Length: 486
Ligand SMILES: Cc1ncc(COP(=O)(O)O)c(C=O)c1O
Image 1 (cartoon, helix red, strand yellow):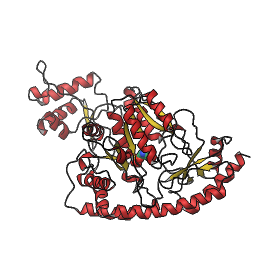
Image 2 (cartoon, protein in one colour):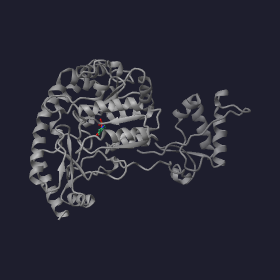
Image 3 (cartoon, rainbow, N blue to C red):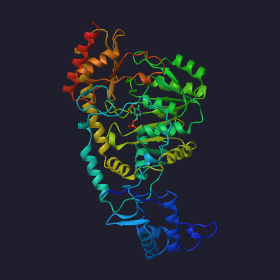
Image 4 (cartoon, rainbow, N blue to C red):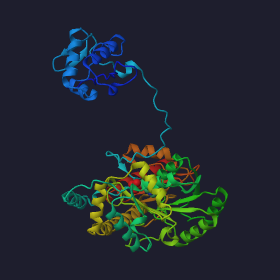
């Protein structure tokens, strides 16, 4: 049976100033205090008093002391005992006054919610722009095997390590060394709740006021930097033209950001991948202008043809802070990502994570470590990429077949999405509306631009949709484009 909480009162001793603890409490103290509180209205009619065993413990007295105080108060007509319900102040009210009847403090003053995507995939529509991978391609059974194996181990670890589960950090470091980042050890690896927390940890520690990002960029990074009070300079990225290195250098010289955050492989949202020349030039520019580099490498291991793409971290060395995640490639719900940083900045990054979460749940990290250790991850990536390559090729064929004149698309050759650029004459909001009516959802990328968008389109996810569904969706998009552009 649901009961209103009891009404708590303090029993002070009868001497000058002390609380109960300063002197033994007697039954007459309880009688005196309750009587006074009832008369003063502090214990309104109908209030439930603490059960005898609760008050006995709170006051550090015997059960008999409390019971005889309550008996006396009942005898004086101040309290009543109700069968199986407890001891109440005599009176008509049914229970404790509701909080709203006492007073209502103002709501907390908060900043408006940033325009973030909910992360939810609509079930009754085709989600054409999502960055997730088709769940059918994800190794849920093998992960469950690993979870069972971890749970069969002798007992749960009692303590957490703010850096993350040690064996997982060792395995991540070994993977990165195998990719040529030869200096990385577990001491450089901080495990995070997805790469989102890695970006958050970086943003919390920055002693600079301005961050440069690509424009457009993954909105979750831009909005996060801004939420930490950092100014953001957008570096214009046209995925059809490559990186305008001179313009970027001018922007760095003018805006003087302390950090440049770059998504160097299969950039979200454009699908663009930096060439080695662009990576090397960026590193030289960063050195010239005193700009630290943070690389979000969300995509380089959604590799095509089994070759990892080059990274800023590989070419630029340990000062480049490197971020990656298992969430897209393994299971979004795992929420495990990591960052890699050089020794002198690690204490600040680690402290930022500690302040935020103290430490992350050990169990998931242990399951992931088991998955990596058994070699399942490499086998999974290879199989996943084979399938993504097939879906990507099919997507390009379909685009050629279904898109009207004037529509262009990027050809990332890896990662989960490409960018579809439609003619300027197309009203994107109207197009989105028409598509939604036909059960196809495309996301706006506007919040990832710094200023008015210079691109006019949206992401196409060939990784999420089974080919037949993708075909249906692209035919609908092609038809709708012809209608709105007629
Ligand atoms: C480029 C990029 N970085 C980071 C994230 C954050 O992802 P997660 O926290 O799942 O690793 C995303 C999410 O879509 C992303 O697109």
